[in-house]
Length: 180
Image (cartoon, rainbow, N blue to C red; front, side, top):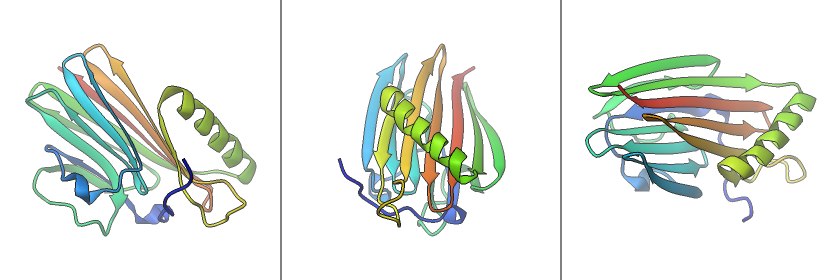
């Protein structure tokens, strides 16, 4: 599959967590995967602005996403939110479900960015969901979206990596959803 969308600038991105599903028409998914395991269902989608993760065990639903700040997202059900930049974290307890997030934006020197980009492309193709995007420089690296979900005893760990070659930036999120 060829490149599909142009990425926004990292400074335009926000992280949001909701305690409910969001309407799928809010996001242009370019790749998606759905898995049912250990009594829960997770749908992971890569979007031009990052990713959408929806997790449910039938009683609790969590929707995590990265999007641009100008996307018209609902206020109802929003549990966490912050701009992406530097390093941030958060935690929510919803009855018998605990959610934790850690996000980071890392700007790398050119040679380290190229190495990290290639490792993410290779690892993502083997372990998770990968999408390539059209970049501003047709001869340069194409931006990547990589999401790797791993079932754990009693939960799910999700690592998402989004590269922004024009800024030499990697946006990373690590989420943990656990039954407690």
